[in-house]
Image 1 (tube, protein in one colour):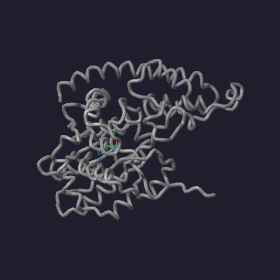
Image 2 (cartoon, rainbow, N blue to C red):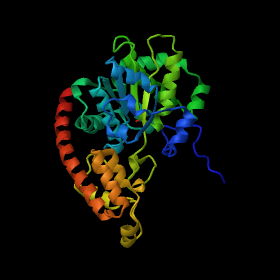
Image 3 (cartoon, protein in one colour):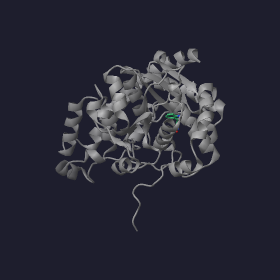
Image 4 (cartoon, rainbow, N blue to C red):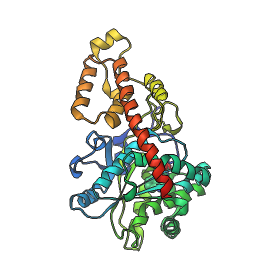
Length: 364
Ligand code: TRP
């Protein structure tokens, strides 16, 4: 039986994550990410975690010639914790903020209500107590970031109604497969999220970029089609920039928001120890064998963490990879090091989170 490698339709609300990034990029017409387009790249860019996008040159030009642009992302508050993978998105928002972007972060409370049955009250509480403070703790400047709730933004809701006549049911089915009314509502709302900063009274006609995992690409395709089709000349097709997913520590590529072996930003020291000790490594079956043959850092979830989040110095990372390959570093040592780095990161993060939480309580 031949297994279809990449399906024709990506379901943003499903749990299967695509694994073959090259095929995905080809199938859906993503551009390859070009490192030289982005000055002072972050490690996600320079280490290939960011691998593709749409209309990236447009944003690169804005950065290089200091023209106005915006960066926007959104979170569905379906859990009362923030997955470590979300850190990549926020790190990249911070990158764009430092390079001149006007930043928008929205809480997709209406989407969560329609597609996941989360009440607006619960969503709001989670966003104010957990998600938004975590994002600020990761480095987003609250003074330069516009946070909003879908349920409270009239510009966005009005725009979603107005733009809803720019798409057909057949187009919707071709992009998403499943045309449940709740999904249609959520998608058109997301299109409005993505395009609304281009409304004249906000930023005017300016390019924008949306950092996202591939699961959200269908929304980009719809947004770009609608922007192109809209008679309103104020819209420019939005750009996107895509990440590879952070697998869970046990190597699971399923959407890991509800999975026990994923790391979360406010995990306790105990949880860190537990999760890291069970991590999937690239080591050999026995200690002897590993000393002789070495391990494979490319199949090792700890190296994935080092690469995306914990070791920012390229030379240090390269040395550790080599030492692991040569059998000089064993799994036990790697785990100890990962626990030490994570514990240190969390200690610092918790402090920033507590102070951000106080700030947020005054902001809304
Ligand atoms: N659909 C996104 C999610 O599942 C949330 C979201 C809503 C979003 N509007 C957005 C993301 C606009 C990026 C841009 O998490």
